[in-house]
Image (cartoon, rainbow, N blue to C red):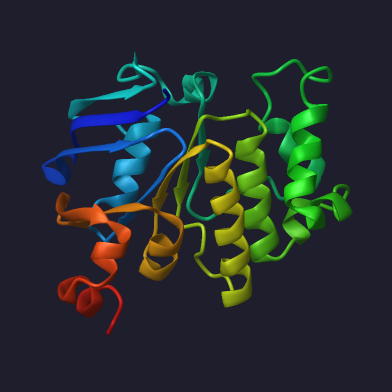
Length: 236
């Protein structure tokens, strides 16, 4: 099993406590969402898991292997794919070269053709634009590219930070379908989102964060109908 297990995770920026002693699990092939207001600690949680910001305390493991001390540059070798907030594609490189950079841990030609074909099958528009500069793509196409780039390493777990940000309702629905397919193929998903409706659609379980702590957690269907969640996060 390739469960992600997070125990006692805390993050501080100087004297500011961004994440305080949180615990959760992402079972293999399942999706878990994290929702909350700006400043709740969602992105800090994801960045700490990836090793992009120091952890004040806590343990992170994937499939029973302790990843607590693994630096960010090596996380992909342990099966973790990361889709950052804001996409961060390389605008001066082609779509295809952006994707190939996601496979930097694999043998350059012998082990990249198959995942590249899979990404193009998942996102046909990227196949059509494989030679176009990434900076010329629309926001939605860049989001597809960022997800495709993370998939090139054949991850067991995907960390996604605000994948719906700035996208039209149609593109959000397209991204939701892709994430549901990845989950069905056995890839674990940890999804940080302000779009609670998307989170509840994609993820079976959800954490609600406030002030760096897990204020509520449970099945998405349960939280979707919770009066507090509906008022604060769904505006209903």
